[in-house]
Length: 447
Image 1 (cartoon, rainbow, N blue to C red):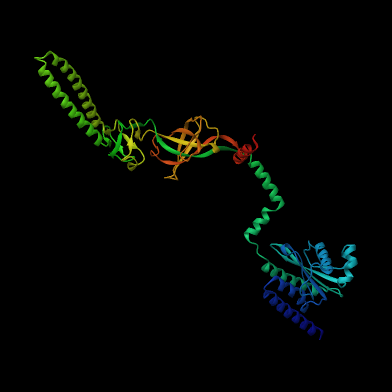
Image 2: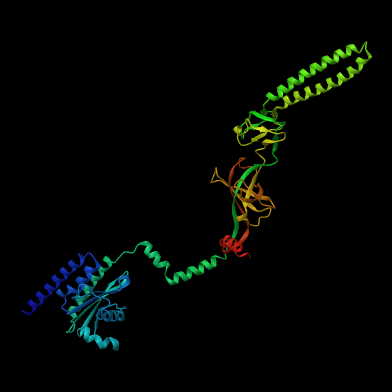
């Protein structure tokens, strides 16, 4: 008869464990799991009071039997929290009584809990202790009940691990970044990195310009009529470049020719009269002078007509802005119109703004990055730096820097625009970062 009753009790315990395990698996949140742990575990283990304490992010007493929403500021939960903190290193099932606590907690035990309590650790092998389930009653806990309690603790630990709040990557990174130890290490690393020597450099606008170009100027005063070349066109020596308008010159030449013919006829007549008249000899001398003057005027205007077509004095590439900028434009004698440059003789001309000024000496390295080819760069070496800043096209004061390219066999195309970075020795990283702010502060404070 006793064996039959014992068998029925074991069957009922097994059935209750299965039902409890099903309820735990169906729990959709930590709140629901906590309610099941403190209120429905009594279907398997008899107790009078229960409480669930969690570690990690949800540290504290989250569920208490008989209370739907526990008040963390209440004296009961505050006392329970202090008790649980004394058991934060719990690794196995433990029976707890008032004598196992400090005198202060011992004195308050009888006000809050029955005589005998059982602490069930909820442990995950990967994380460790997830929480502690406290079961309290008047009677002592038996060996078979403790075996069931251990299995219940494993079920609740597995459910807690499955329902734990998953931290996003940003949250994990923020916790890592704001940890005190990491901040101290980061500060030491940054402080040490500030003294790493780096190359001091600055960026500036640059252009590929010709070396010793031939300047083509207007041979006389007039208006540009037409161009025979286009910008960046290669021309040979003697090729026509542009023409000046000949309307005014042809009119002056025709007038000079008529005056020359008139003076020639007057001279001829005076020469005939001089044979018989001595006075006519004096007139002949005067007419001879006038004839010579008109001849010079005619030769001058004829020479100017020949010079209206400007030809290339040597071969090269025509360097100027646009044909339409010059056609119809009045020019004076000696005014620059275009340049003839050798494409194999180019240099780099850069302008360093006053605000970005660093000490650059001849021989310094420059890396040129053309805008037309951002993945291509050309190395150059500084030849000279202007001693005085001058306004550039944007009306910003800048120092002109001239440099020659290191590799003669791979020169950039004439006229390329881009950005150049010039280097000027090594300085600590902190100086490179604070150089501009310090310059502004000095201007404000007048150091």
